[in-house]
Amino acid sequence: MTKVITYGTFDLLHQGHINLLRRAKELGDYLIVGVTNDNFDRDRGKLNVRNNVLERVEAVKATGLADQIIIEDYVGQKIDDVQKYDVDIFAIGSDWEGKFDYLNEFCKVVYLPRTEGISSTMLRAESQDIVRVGIIGCGRVARRFPSEANIVNGVFVTSVYDIDKKKSQEFAKNFNDVQVCDNLQELFSRVDAVYIATPHLAHYENIKAALKAQKHVLCETPMLLNGEQAKELYRFAESQGLILMEANKTAHCPAFNHLVVLIKSGVIGDVVDIEASLSQLLDRTGREFDPAQAGGALFEQGSYPLLPIFKLMGINYDELTLYSRMEKGVDTYTRGVFRYPRATCSFKVGLGVKTEGNLVISGTKGYAYVPAPWWLTDYFELRHENQNENKKFFYKWDGFGLRYEIQEFISCIVNKRFSSARLRRRESIQMAFVMQQFNERKNFFEI
Image 1 (cartoon, rainbow, N blue to C red):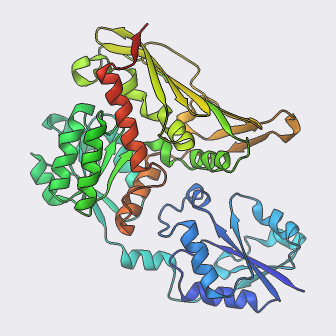
Image 2 (tube, rainbow, N blue to C red; image 1 turned 90 degrees about the vertical axis):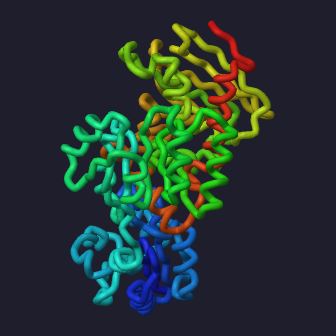
Image 3 (tube, rainbow, N blue to C red; image 1 turned 135 degrees about the vertical axis):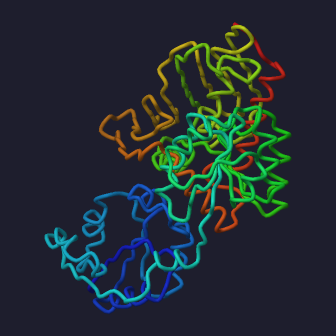
């Protein structure tokens, strides 16, 4: 029996894909099709894939041409697969001519003619309108947004607004074709969606105003400091057919998502403990130390260490106890301890205290270790009792990392997905309830 293998993203499956699969099938008796997973696509810079991996696998399966479908997860997997499945022929489109000649050492390489006049890129361009985005709030985080948005197709930053007009004018000088708006209503009239990067206490009113103006919203983390307000705005957004998403860059980072998938697959057994920490030593004259502007370590940093806890353990914990070091009305250090039915989890955040800043996930068969700064995940290890079983994973962190959350935001708009799997609405809401608990000083101790 002659085995043939081919690979592709197979986004928006079209006649060109079907023709390629048919030509590959005709080369042998058994066709294996490798479909790239979402994180691998992102890692290769493919930020505009419309269909997720499950949808793409189903589309390939529906052609009836594949005898076996596998998932491509990493660079170098093709060599492993050719040997693992005892492949005779590697087939790929002619636009890759010469790129895979190195596989001739292991099997025959055949470059198949592509169907002219059709591609997934063309279909995406034809079917996706440009999403015009306006920026509300022109602080240091917002300054990273336009260059990151330029990486993602279908996004055009058109307008900015800040209550301090000098800030918005200074902001616009650095970016071409960005219009300074005098008020929010002017900005809303020019855009389809907004990115909110205002101080924490302004988020609720900014989000509500944008949703009432029928605009999709991507809001910086922490999105809200009150769980009931978070529930209200998510419900309102969906009732209007609009996307509301929290901009937590770690949640959309390819490496972090791969880590979560691996842990959930059971590679370290049952998770019994998570420790996450994050700290910065900042200028004490800044907004972060002003209680009137919701300053403090938990409000400023808390959504990041809460992310791995809620992604892996869920939001149904039995108890949360908070311990804080308070100075002039703000917490310069907070430690939180969650008690789950079969696990405990803890986190530490600090603005006036420096800590290691790593992430450790302990399980019954091993543990995962992500070194500082873990929230910019580009490397992690899975460690076991037998050190020969340890594995190290390396990734590329591109730019400021905002491109991943922007791509997911646009994908949610295009596909009308009201909740992203990378940061579920319920997880975002529970983060807001943790902030609310801190604010109300329930089950809270100063140290």
